[in-house]
Amino acid sequence: MAPRHSPGGSTDQAGPRCPKRLAGNVFEPPSVLDWRVRERDIRPSPSFFLHRLLGAGEDAVRADFTALLAGRSFEAVLPNVWSQYLSDMRLLDALAQHSERRRAASEAEWQVVDCAAYTSRVLGSVTNRTEAHHERMQALLGALLANPLWSDRRAKWLFIQPHYDLRGTVGRKLAEALVQRNAQIGPVILATVDRDGAHIGSQMPYFDLYRRAVMVPHVATPELARTARLCLPGSCPADASRRGYLFHGDLSRFDGGVRGAMRHIIDHLRHPASLQAKILSRGTATDTNPEPGAGGTGRFEPTARHVAFRETSAATSRAMGESALCFSPQGDMMTTRRLFDALASGCVPVLMKSIGNAPRLWLLGSNPFHHSIDWRSIGLFLAPRSVNLGERGAAGDVTGKQTGGKHYPKGCRAEEAAWLDAKHANESLVRGLREQGRDAFRAHLDVEYHPRGVAEALLRELAYVLDDDCATRRYKDWYNARPRSSGMSKNGYLYLPAAARFLAAGAEADGAAPESATRCGVGEEMLMEEATHAKRGRRAGRDRR
Image (cartoon, rainbow, N blue to C red):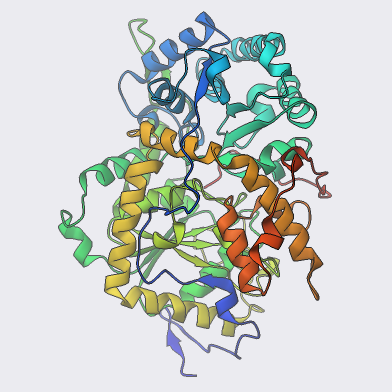
């Protein structure tokens, strides 16, 4: 095979052919792109009741947080380590206006905790009143335990807590109460950004909450979200000139080597790639909390460090608007904010995960709202083959080149790069994926500027969530019973897509009747699993980009 010219100016032999078939590690886009899911089993959005358990205390949190922002976007004021998860208050406000809201709890199918716990945590941190947040969580625990529906086995509860660290947000006692109710009385469904949060820090005691969680999107960078709202199909002339690939971010996450594999794929691409490590794309200064403004109005002002961070972030946003494909590899968790930034900017995301010998369906997991969005119509899915920790990036790497480059499978990376180049060269496909992705973002993924659409998709997931959890458990059992199966651990279905139709299709493709892999027995939806505990949890760093 002839050497390929790399973006850095050097040539590199592709190496021997990859021993693993590429087809088992990618999802090809459907022939007809349509982000809207066409369910055979269409279920109406369930009714719900909002339990305002903290009363005036919750009102005070919302008033203080609104005053802090003073009409500005989350990220105009707050560091993105806070802002990218701030969906709870927006979603609860949107649910309050929804037509399925009931005025009596006895009339509702779901009971929703109307408390923006994560917003309360952020407010406490920014205003140096963390003790007030802890007191609110204690009061919430007492109110839940005193609520008759909390001990009613027929009641189903939803708790919106988007951050990956449940215990860090609500405290150990409330987190344990959620687990206990979920295991012994009836379902407690957690709404969070990634089920893989169970592996961050010391979250494994809450495994069953994460296992059946409904995933919600990260909050996208505000300028990109605003662009998506204005950039309707055919109205963005800049889209015609998009070329190349982009990744700006950290190369040394706990990702099993995926980002290093991405770096080596970039070496083999025929089209130019904008690769910047974290220190270049986001600046060297630590982002900081805002400071109180003058006049005692409750308004806070961003620090000079935050302004500097926003300037470098804006440069990355502009670069995304000029690129055709944007890499979105897993990091400490399976999904990251850059996926939603890519969709909003019109840069087709390339979702990359390490799946080893697990089912290919892992590639589709950890994305929100599978009953509203067909993710195969809005992104490209690639699992680099034979990924190893030697490809993991070096901490503090400025150039983005300090990966274990001597012993990686060059034949695999060259073939994966050729697959991406073929997609990049297909202008009709890229244009279709871009337009479908922006449409899906505007409809159901824009937390800050269209929370009603996000809330609608969240409710649709609740119509299926218990059946999907049961189907996933059955699929895991079927998968592990296959001849020559390498086995999927009890943790494995954290990464499967939360939609039974994918599991049935996956089983059928492997020669099984789909019903045998996904059928649920009566009462089986309340079975709990014992998590497989890792020897040590992943480090819970502050920045997950």
